[in-house]
Length: 187
Image (cartoon, rainbow, N blue to C red; front, side):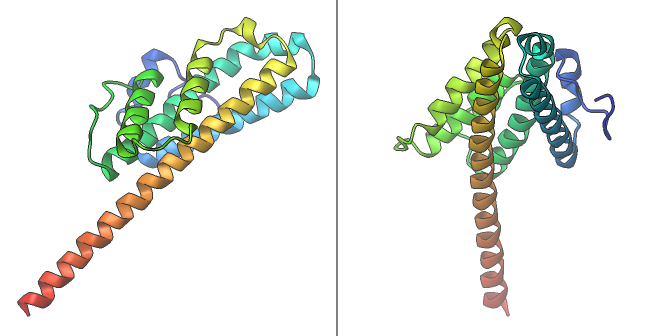
């Protein structure tokens, strides 16, 4: 990413391959930087409050949004693969739609009785964000609406990531307890 502390992907399909060798820290850092750039961009556009500013910033907003979703979903999918039994096939690449499908269906399989609607709402928002074109962001209210929807998606992803971390920690504790029981049984 130009102007950043790392040479991460800029969200272009050709640069997606650089995610494959990225460390969890790289992904975390790139997603933080991208989130900050998105926040700064939105603050500037909304602060100006003009349709011209929205139209001029729309391509960058869309590029950063796709980049952010790719980074966050890569992290969330990887965490959930470690923490939970795979009931759905892993995404074959780093495309947002493929990663989201993996995360969505794995979360559904893990909690089929969940009727909160959170996953479905995030699904609708991600599909909407991916389907946006610059003309859809022609005014401050449209930018504000989609920025809020992206923030809701991030909250959902953070919750899914936290659930994976809790599950992974519980598995580690069970493993350590089993080792301790075996150690005590052999002494």
